[in-house]
Image (cartoon, rainbow, N blue to C red; front, top):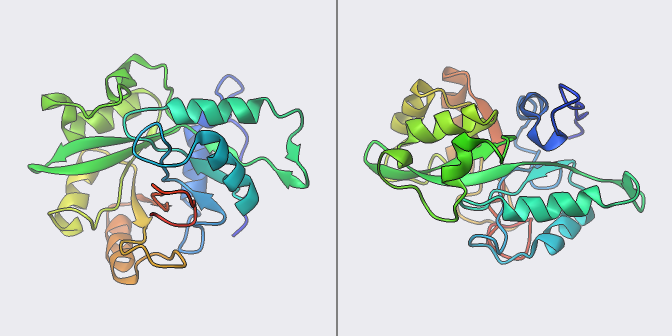
Length: 236
């Protein structure tokens, strides 16, 4: 899948915070997008992953990713290190490969219908006051953990909110997705490998169910490996 990445919507907006461009990408994501063209769910040593940020970006280049987001839990430190590395490259090319587009990302532990869910935030301004509470390297508590509050904070910071792996919780996607849609969530992680298959591929039954619900509620579809190990092409 080849997608032309739009430039920043406004010259004053850093590309990593360009939610309009990212929305355009999400609108084109399909079952073949991950893990070699796009990957919007991965972790570094800055939360519960094993990858050093420098090794992660080197893998992203080797794979040939067009775009990606680091979604450490309650932290953007990994993102900052990789963005700095990308910014320091003397040219837009590393060898014969274009640098991939990196977007700001985070994964936030939230409460929805009395269970824990995870909400991914993308392309937000990490300096925005509304999001600071969720970037303290620990899960929010009380009312701050409510999914409605988390989604609102991501939107106030200019970002897009996505329900991570909707078929991995104690309640069915049939219940959870309508609820987060009611709170204004932008998308769902439709293409996800629930049983860590090798090679990575979206789980067929869950994908079909989540995609049907995303279409019903007019939500964006995203994909990601949710890498916690040393290989961006796998979850573990």
